[in-house]
Length: 324
Ligand SMILES: *[C@@H]1O[C@H](CO)[C@@H](O)[C@H](O)[C@H]1NC(C)=O
Ligand SMILES: CC(=O)N[C@H]1CO[C@H](CO)[C@@H](O)[C@@H]1O
Image 1: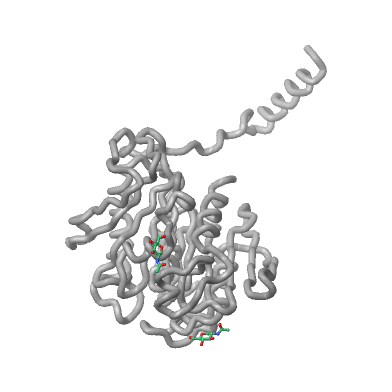
Image 2 (image 1 turned 180 degrees about the horizontal axis):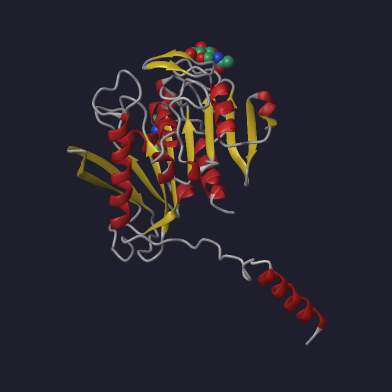
């Protein structure tokens, strides 16, 4: 026996004596869903799924299959929630998330809200928060049985009313367990306005929850400073971040000023997550998806391109969230 082997033997005996496991638990391997092995055709294509029954209602969503889809390889899934008076197709065009530069190795899912929005704001009367959370659960079950999904890598993003719904999901005992990370853009957080504890009950097993928010400092629809919005009161974004820092048990944040002061990037370490809570404030950005290229929501504000690409930041955030 060589010296190092002897040391190892002693060490493993000591571990046994201490009742410790001899080997480290293997890293979580990707979990393949029951949809693996099923052909998806055509690829690099957005498929429509109509007639999904959820809570007795007819619901729909679309999903984009990447160009080189391999039916036996489990893919991460990103679910993107559109803003109010909108549909999934608009979010797809606006964010460009179906393009291979963002999702060559991901399935992107675009659910459609009832009457063009998500429950939470007072203007939405077509469904309840619990119905919409059930719809999300049903979509995930549906997509997993049809497409080859890595069940450990399912993420949620959304814009405006859809960004607020991201917060609603993260605050829900069930919703918080459906996704591994959450990214909200210009979020209208109608359901989370009363401090860290009220009406926000993430599942303790999901904490700390990787969560990112991107917001325009010149947003006149969902104001950075909070106040009355189209569908009720909204929290100030800085308060909302503080509440998540508390829920997630984050340590004090670091601040990075980018693009000559145009962008403030805040990052918190939360438990084992090096950058579990993230925020980008884009000073002159209005109520639209941040992109260096002009797009639909910018034109509707009206607003020109800005200095950062939200789609790139969000996809990177998701990849990092499941690395460790
Ligand atoms: C803020 O938005 C308004 C339009 O809503 C625009 O007139 C103004 O120039 C913007 N300010 C900055 C600093 O971009
Ligand atoms: C108005 C505008 O520029 N829309 C573009 C948004 O992005 C999609 C995908 O790249 C384009 O097809 C649209 O023309």
